[in-house]
Amino acid sequence: MADWKGIVGKNFSPEAFDSYCHTLQWNAWRPSFMVLHNMGSPSLAQRPHGLTSQHMQNLVGFYRDEQKWKAGPHLFIDDSQIWVFTPLTVSGTHSPSWNKTALGIEMLGDYEREAFNTGRGLKVRKNTVAALATLCAILGIDSQTMRLHREDALTTHACPGKNVRKLEVIQDVQDLLIARHAGEHPIKPVA
Image 1 (tube, rainbow, N blue to C red):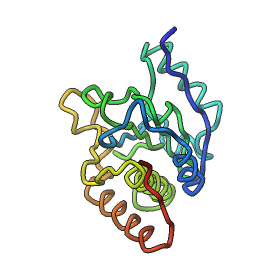
Image 2 (image 1 turned 180 degrees about the horizontal axis):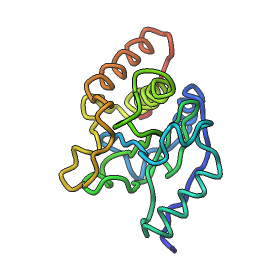
Image 3 (image 1 turned 135 degrees about the horizontal axis):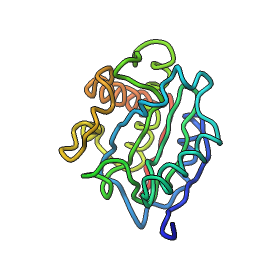
């Protein structure tokens, strides 16, 4: 597909993701909020070692060749890393109503069935919260504006599953932002 936006295909720890985001130029496109998704399939059980570079390449084939999309979600997050897929500085494809205005964040797991507050699900949650906090701070986005994919009136997906509770995630992001502001993990906003 000639107009495929390409992928970054790099993985980061939460700290390295924060540093990476500070290197980006947010000139051409600047999102207004973020949308949380869960992959559903594969589940955490189906990816016992998380996501790999090969999985990212397989997702390119899925989004570009099978779905015929111009891009995919921006991030894929598992229990040990944050993968940047579609460049964060361009619009992606992830939610019918919000592709042009929001970052799409996919989490490894099926949170209709898998826990999001214990075990590997909790690790995914912590990495997701760290990524959200970084993006809120850098882009000046209010964490209260975060949405779940299932809130999109044009979607057919109950995503992320019922175990992802929006208000709990927002509170986790706010708590981390407060801790970072207090000097535990400094984040400098980008103009």
